[in-house]
Length: 358
Ligand code: ADP
Ligand code: GN1
Ligand code: MG
Image (cartoon, rainbow, N blue to C red; front, top):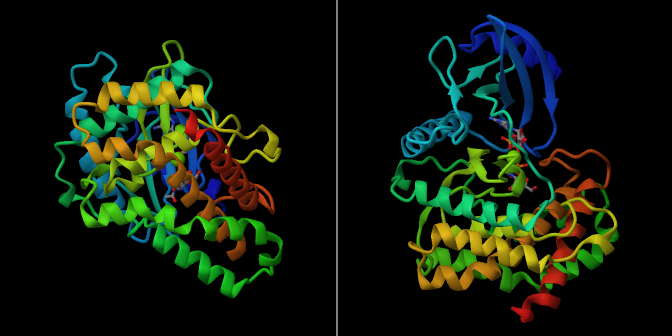
């Protein structure tokens, strides 16, 4: 069934008061199908986010929701004294059957959150102040979860940031070459294979226990963070599907990848893509304000490299998906995954040119 029609049908199963006024589509994420509804009750409008969980990516949506319910409850307690506590954590709306998800007639899993209003999301960092606040927000999020028992979490995507696995998936896609796209991406493949060993080090150090195992978000790209439109404070970290045990370097890496790029993730004009050193300094300054108290020496030493490694893993994953025929990420046009991969590679090259300067 068409996703919009399905959304219209499932919304009534959640515990929402009032009359449905409208439903809009949100296309910002690459994974789930997201809709925003507006309800009116006694003249007051309230918005909700409804998402069809991507079952190709999350094999067990029930376990995803168990994690989210547990983690949001934990954070809710941490932010309970804030005057704006309602926008500092995602609020799951349960179904009339008291479940955090609804299964539709096609077997698809849907969930509903309160839509957090009066916030900004960015695909590209707007200011050094926002960069600083993003760092602070991610550090804060890690701190809020520092006393959450990671063994309670379900593994929603096993080996999510395992670079060795991501290269094996690339190898498999290249061998199958189902769309005959490999000939076109020789330069990208050469670069990625030349950088393989360096890219695997963070995962390997995590597996060896050199990097501590903590509860991490694992998808801290900038548009998964909501900012206050006036102060630019990062008020809420969303998209909690991949919360799992990990190293904090997965999170520092993705915030660096997305906030320290002078262009968007899918910029076609590669001359616009470069590593934004000014943003980096501000981002890490902000991050340290929240995280300085708990980081180990090894974690601190790995932060800069984490930006390169997470950019690399995204390049590998985008290219794998391009070669495999665009089966994982949502794409808006034919070469979208290839464009995304090339942007990541340009960013890495720019990091390499500037890395020595700080
Ligand atoms: P995906 O996994 O597909 O990235 P997300 O959970 O990140 O899905 O949601 C996609 C987008 O929807 C986000 O980038 C954000 O703009 C918006 N969004 C999702 N949930 C909320 C919410 N509760 N309040 C406000 N905006 C939200
Ligand atoms: C996906 O869900 P979204 O769009 O926030 C992906 C991340 C990638 C990101 C690249 C579960 O994030 O791992 O970093 O795209 N999420 C999943 O933009 O694969
Ligand atoms: Mg997202």
